[in-house]
Length: 289
Image (cartoon, rainbow, N blue to C red; front, top):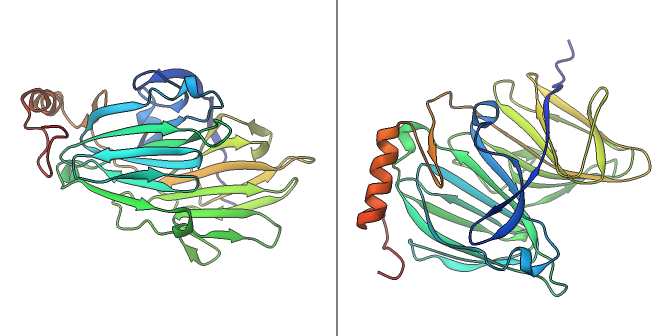
């Protein structure tokens, strides 16, 4: 029996402003966390005008989640309370597990033409891992293999496996898959996905058919129904490019306020009280303290 995943929901990313004034598009976020469990939010911060992004994301806290930043172009300067610092460039990935608490900043810089862009995904942590020690993984473009398939499709494998090639990210509790797929016009991508995992695609170039009669183009997210594989075809006459992301849902209570996601309101109150009194960071040191 064909257990192809169909399109359960489609959403168009909405303009919003975050950080110190960064204009971006939110594919999904607060209010949709049950639909996308274990994923909480996906932001698309592609832009061609430095005025839209140069204010950046100054020092701010996270607890209880993982933040995954994937760059397409430009650079982001990063620093955090663990002592990490550096630049995230085109093709690079920053996989940050906030755990018990991390304070960091991300300050975007454009390329030579002033363009900057990429995506930030938030993944939830289960209750038993909310207060784990924070950790930071920096992956260069060369760390994530690009697989070229027989039909000319190219897939950057950040997490998961394509055609026997595994991505560099492992040891993550939600067992995620994170692929960036570029399809030639009229080419098809068929990929297995664990039946019990949540899966979605986000289009960031061209248009494709994600299920019979369901087409989606740039800045559209497609949440898939149950099944064991996806079948995606670029439309005739133009290539398509999209993220394909999946992970094991947690099915736990979610208490979410700003950059902190816990399981109860009391845990949220504790986190913000600790941030105010300077005891939020359990590993490392408060920047500037």
